[in-house]
Image 1: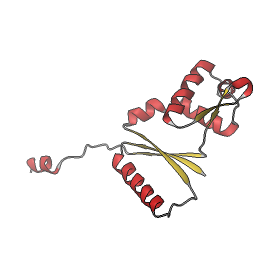
Image 2 (image 1 turned 135 degrees about the vertical axis):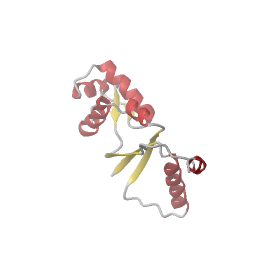
Image 3 (image 1 turned 90 degrees about the vertical axis):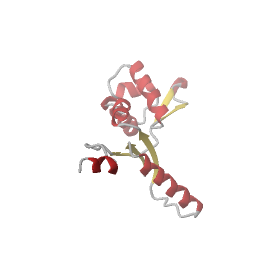
Image 4 (image 1 turned 180 degrees about the vertical axis):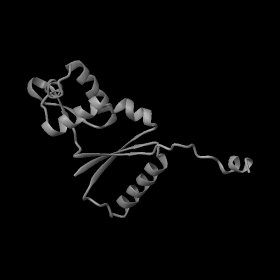
Length: 138
């Protein structure tokens, strides 16, 4: 199973995960049971702007039905082809899907290379207060 891990705002955790991955690769201790890729958004707003409900529906339709063209993908979600084309290009830029030549009549075929998407959203409700600032009120 190949999983796309989507995170928001937790840059230190992504950095730590990358270091662990490099260490595991260098010591030949990689766990092959779950191929994983990570996509990180800087803010929650960036995530919401990029992964709209319509785009998530499109990703799922492509994963489930493997359309042979952008036009067929648009039919699956009952949307205008030009809007779907724009969404597919955006999702390709993010690395969520691939557009491969070779569909019918040379059409671009959208392919989702993941079986699953897992999202981790770090959304603090209160900003971290620096220790010095906290002691001022004491």
